[in-house]
Image 1 (spheres, rainbow, N blue to C red):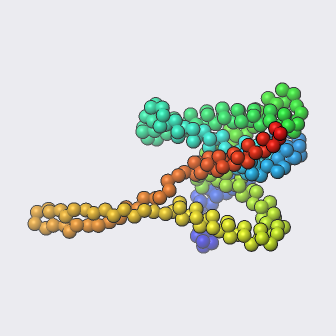
Image 2: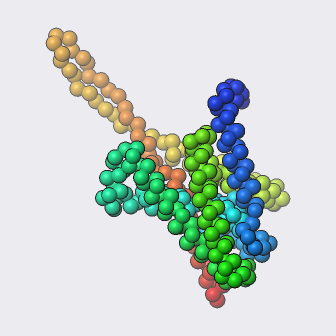
Image 3: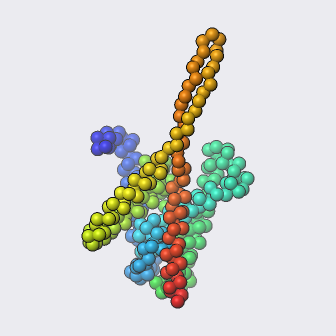
Length: 282
């Protein structure tokens, strides 16, 4: 593997793409530490204490802990992922979108444009919800004008992240949106490793086994194939004839996309959020 990386580094085009991707990811991580105008990050972090198993904790994970700091990239790239899922579902319901999907590259470009517009709308709605949630909890003590500035900043941050993801896809190594999400999750890895090292003997023993079991199960389900036998009939072409042939077709067992898996993981954290809200209401 290291020899392959060294050979790839010698190619000027690949080297430029890798360096460009690293630069974009570095800018993303830098923006995750810059708080929104007038936000006290320590108060927001105190509000997030003990919310690891809720929806807010999961969204904070996907944002690389930027949401707990309420930085300019606090929303992360999740509004774009949500908009993509909504557009994929609407293509089955709305005939116009279904027709655009069948038109090929031009139709997909139009759908991508709709996805960008929907992303801006979802980012504005989500940032408004976060601003009023933190204000109601006492983490934000600003007037309405400052809240509007915070909402505009978070919406603009999501728009910039969407643009950065497209830059990585076009000028970098590709899969820009997935790389941004991977960088966000990887940013929380040191805290997880530190908690594992400082944990008890049971945690040190069972956590690697559980993690290894999950990886093996995911790879087995994702890469599993179902072999379907195909029998071709004997053909007569003049005097010579071809004997019957037998081959196999191997479709994947699991065809779920990463966006659907992220949506399902969000739904699984909803019970913890409901329990937290009910305990606070009591």
